[in-house]
Structure formats: C-alpha cells, structure tokens
Amino acid sequence: MSKVVIQMLKNGPYLVGGEIEIKDAEGKSVAVKKDANALCRCGASAARPFCDGAHVKAGFKA
Image (cartoon, rainbow, N blue to C red; front, side, top):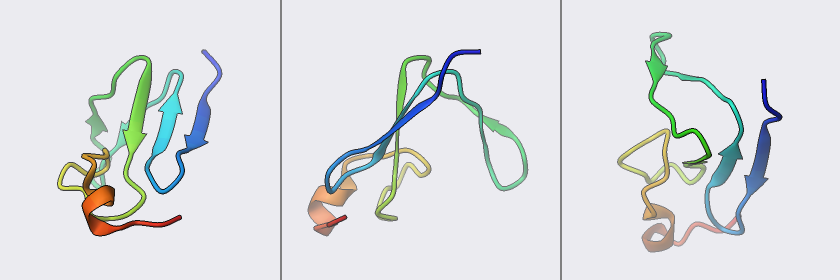
C-alpha cells in the first residue's frame, strides 16, 4: 500500500494522493482517481465529496 498524503490547498480543497478508498454514507465505495483527488471542504460543491471549484464563487476562506 502506498503512502497517503493529504495537502490542504489555500482557500481550496484537500488534495489527497496515494492509494485511498472513499465510501458514501451507505458504505458503498466511490470511484476515485489513482493519483490525486480533490475533496471539498467548503460545502458548496455539487460533486461532493469531490471539489468542483465552487469554493471560488462561494468566497471560501480557510
């Protein structure tokens, strides 16, 4: 298993790299990219748990 790295981008999403598994509220696996996944932390994304860039329009500041 590869090392998992989580990077908080300034006023943006969490960038998660490495071998990860994401599950929804029912416990079903969500498809992820192999290299890096941007996860929403502003709550405005229509593609949650993934970031769709909505933090910019929402004026999210971390």
